[in-house]
Every structure is written in C-alpha cells, then in structure tokens.
Image 1 (cartoon, rainbow, N blue to C red):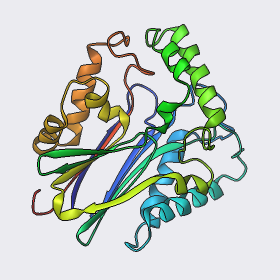
Image 2: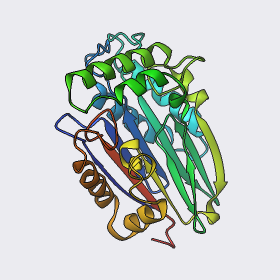
Image 3: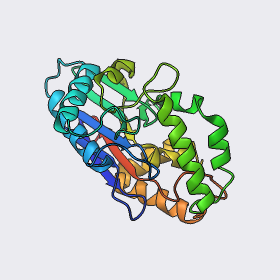
Image 4: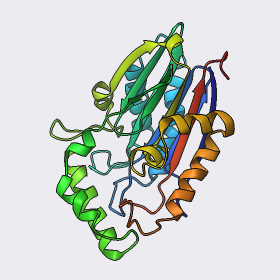
Length: 272
C-alpha cells in the first residue's frame, strides 16, 4: 500500500505524537498528557513514543507476527531501556496505539485507546476505535469543560482529571494504554477485514480526528477527499485553522487550545 504521513505539535511544547510507516504498516501513537504531574521517568513522553514507535516497526517486520504480540514485545523492549526509572509510577509515560497492516488480501488492525482507524469501503466509512477512557471520570471531564483553555482554573482541573485517570489506568476498573507493561497489549481491540473491500484508510491521533468527531466541522468523506488531493499535512493545517477560531475553548471545550496531531493515510497501490 502507499502511505503518506504527517505530524505536528499543537503548541510550543514538544510533539508527543508519533507516526511511522513501511510499505505494509502504519503506526500512530498519541502520548498521554502528564499535566505537569510526576511520571517517575527522566526521559519524558516524546522519548517514550519515539522508542515505542521504532520498536513496534521492528517487532512487526515479520508479517506472521500478530499485532498484539508485536506490541507486547515492543513494550517489554522499551521498558528495558530505562530500568532506573520508576516504571511502577501510575504516571509513567504512556500512549494510545493505532496499527494498520496490509497482508495478502487482508488488513489487520489494532487500536488501544482513542486514536482511531477509519476505513473507506465503497463510499462507507467505518471507524475503529477504543473509547473505554470515555466511560470513566465523567464528572471531572465535565468540570474541566467549564473553564476556558489556558486559565489557571482549567489547568488545575486537567491535573485533577489526569490524576484520577492514572489511578485506574491499565486496571480492569479503568481503561488500557501502552505504558511499561506488556499485558496492556492483550486488552487492545484487534481484527481483520477484507483488503480488497477497502479503498483507503486513515490512521489518526485524536488531535486530527477531532475535526470530525469533536468539532463536527467536516465529514469523513470530506476528510478523505482532502487527504487524497492534498495529503495529511493539509488536514492538520485545516484542524489548526478551525482551532484558531476558538482559542479559549468556548465553542469546543478541550484540554489544550491545540492538540498534537498525527495522520497516516493509506491507499491501495492501484488507487494511489
């Protein structure tokens, strides 16, 4: 398949998204915000997603390796790179994961947390995502949405939300993300679809998908038209232009004025 990629930080802080590809694999990682809280790790989220992304590509070099097995292997390998850090800290660097891999007549997918994969199938758009995080801490999310982005009240509320999420992250009572332990890979949502039925696919962090899902300023059909004609970078620019009309989060309450964004756009070779 033909894959084009782009990623961009949402502001002045380092980009905590990561995107990578091979001719048969697309990977998008979205590092989880620390909200200024301790992580027990001296390396930071950008380092973590870069290491995890590289190890994922290597672990999945063999097409026979199941996606969840490759993720578990990569998680173990990255944990081994920083044993002096406190990997038991509930805030240890972590990330969402979205993987799409082409095989003979098939497309395998894996999603862990809320970075979606969207498949274009004969004019129909199928969204594959893991929204278990939305089932927890609803009261704190609602509190955060009451404040304008960038205010002290908003920052304090986000910190309370992140602290509460950490307490149930990677537990049966909460939701699952890539962090220090390989067991999270077994909780990812995986599947396979007929590759011949898919014209194209987009693998995105939620900083890019929110143009449709949160802002409702485009349809998936319009997004795919833009990706096909102008590429992933133009889609991220469109998200930024929309966010610029609401810098304080009044119309669209959110955790950051602009979130990091990553896109991998995959087309069959005969459709590129």
